[in-house]
Length: 314
Ligand code: ZN
Image 1 (tube, rainbow, N blue to C red):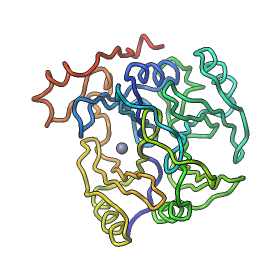
Image 2 (tube, rainbow, N blue to C red):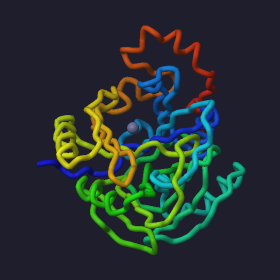
Image 3 (cartoon, rainbow, N blue to C red):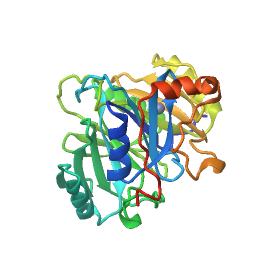
Image 4 (cartoon, rainbow, N blue to C red):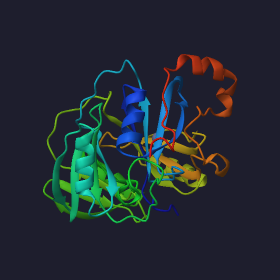
């Protein structure tokens, strides 16, 4: 019997400039650069992971910087927006903080009894901060005071080409219909964090993948054995599903649901950081064993990156 997914594992987007990406997510949003590695399908492209201290599931945003990438356009079928959880009562702090960094915000407005502000990162990626109670321990050595710090992922908003198709795959994965407000339909999983997926029932133009767009959303699967079961179930039901892949930090598969959005199912173990490297995990370029012999070639090819040091970024 397949277990429901507890919630979101990570969200991945495409941007243009690695340095701008690091500066925004560490200096402005106060997340930790938990891991810098390369795209396992393209070793001369970086892959940057941000989250709380160890980058546990439900806290992680990841980005592929492609310097020559064209601008993306938000539309269907896409993940239009990623929402991050902030403690209730901190909206004013965040409005001031973002304004001080020259970032315009929309809001605050109320939605499902939560307060939301909306803004974009320098590539145009749509983000929200949403007040929500959370058990996640934030990254405490960043520039944002602990009481205001981001508590991980709150959820995502999806623009689907077939909202009923997307809803049925969410239900298959274990999300329940929670509520509807205007053209926003909220689904929620039963986990302890990163449990919200909103479907927007809105007539919008088709989007284009590129800088500023999200690439996929990954959902949590506790064990690798379950990935094979999910694989078989998706295939039986006629979905376009990949084989199970070794992503080093987790095993995963990808499925394109009938509303056009790319979902990844990713295992919780082994995780982004081992206990021995939890001190400064993002400071060195991490390569999986199969790329180690090419390290010097890879390091020569990647554009230089100035990293925050945890103490300096206070
Ligand atoms: Zn992924």
